Amino acid sequence: MRLFATDSENDLMNIAENAPGAKIFFRILTEGTGADWPLSRKFGSHPDTIYHLILQSAEMGLNPWGISFHVGSQQRDIGQWDDAVARCKYLFDAVAEEGIELKMINIGGGFPANYVDPTFSVKEYTDEILRFIEEDFGDHLPDIILEPGRSLVGDAGIIVAEVINLSRKSKNNLYQWVYLDIGKFGGMIETIDESIKFPIYFEKEGLAEEIILAGPTCDSMDILYEHYRYHMPDSVVPGDKVYIFTTGAYTQSYSSVNFNGFPPLQAVIYRDNQGDE
Ligand SMILES: Cc1ncc(COP(=O)(O)O)c(C=O)c1O
Image (cartoon, helix red, strand yellow):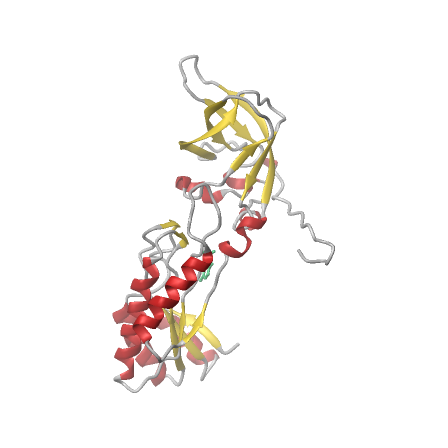
């Protein structure tokens, strides 16, 4: 392995010690504004800090190679790439004055899957992002790396769940609580703050009523949607199936090991006749 990402001095020293001469790319901070699932703050450093790390890396005998960023997952504002690419260009130019020629930008993930709110297509994203890169870099395009996650696999998954209880907590409550056999700890952790709104379908038909959706565990934070109102046909009874779409990304791998005795979410993979998954 000769290509490493970093955003901090300690990390850089470790790489210099253990992989001398390795290619390094440096992650810049982004705000994650516009993303359903922001990845801001925790990774990346301010461009000024990155500038110094790049110079340091060359002095340490490493090979400064490029800049990376992640604009936040399920990023709905394509303009966020424009800002981030501009910061990359600024760094390319700044270190070029010190004789360092960067060669690559890694534009991360953030491309959309299809949840409740509509988005542009991935093609519309990539066309726009390429335009931003060409505007900034002109004829001297760097190598471009993408790290798509959600947009590749999100739409491929459907969770088949079950209604386990319905409850109106007082006769004056407008909304019923609907408890499913899956919740935050069964793989739907991205419902934190109701960030990711999965399309949810009930097998029954009937007059739609607004509901509060909750998971099965003892933890009162195991509520899926209390503010955003999902609808359920009024004919639904416990035992009925519920289909949760666009659950191919960040669900099974998040599901807990036997919290409250619930086994981790199982995956069943369908293959077509050609053996493709
Ligand atoms: C460094 C990095 N790259 C790519 C991804 C994939 O992002 P997405 O699923 O938004 O495409 C992630 C997700 O957390 C990530 O942390």
